[in-house]
Length: 406
Image (cartoon, rainbow, N blue to C red):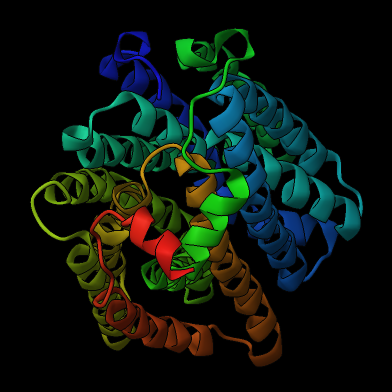
């Protein structure tokens, strides 16, 4: 392992990592605001837009595995710089795309790859290697809270940019802003990776992957994270259009997404803090079950700006609070040597769920004229995710016993 003297300071890791996540996740959370402007301007269906964002989530998940492997081997700096450049190219390409195929390649593939290199799996790898275990869950909660603050900060900003300059110009401005992640990445250059040196590991990549996928608790974490992706991306992308279809103003949708981001600052931080004191599987089960209840009550209550804001606040507390608990559990079970890669695999499951949530939202809307079926699916999956998290074993894996059993 790295010499403790070669580690980055926790303050430096959190400041630079949180700022990168703030930008990357903040931009990403606002994509739902572009659904109606883009489809109306281009004459496309909602399914066309939703499919591109679904591809984005899938590309993010697939690329995240390889971005994690590279970050574990060569450090996060190079991966983040590459991701920032791809983010800028994807946003500029999204603005100029003239066909659904080009829109899917830019808004989907390029931005998905960009997010893989600039979000949680890579940042959490740096945290895992540079923050002691007794503070790791808390530190991951801080980084997740930064992503939530990015949503609170960036979503109203993106709505303002669209309203003031137009949707294409807003994407160009964001593309330029995304390059700010490059200088921030400099603060995450780990001394242990300088000169191409590699962290010492007990396992090869293949051994680490095989061990994880044979471990039932890893499979259960992946199943729960699938549901997380389904719920949050469906709501994040389709709720603005759902509210406008119900007669509410676009500002209500912008404020709703911003409130989700604001309250999730507290929710993710609290989840990280609680993860140091209680079993993380119980935190995850509570989050998923409470989401199911919140969605049910939202659909039953009379729809108004007030009910939307209350729902957004509750969902905000639960929004990304799964992230520190899930990733800290992976680190606790398997260690940190391959943390970015293993987190990438778990996140891939999250992104398959994201693909299904955002695509089904557009597909079923175009077929039925409403989002009712997808809301009901989200409720049922929330209950299922709560149940599958309860049997998870969080104790560190006994590799000697595992090797003897194989």
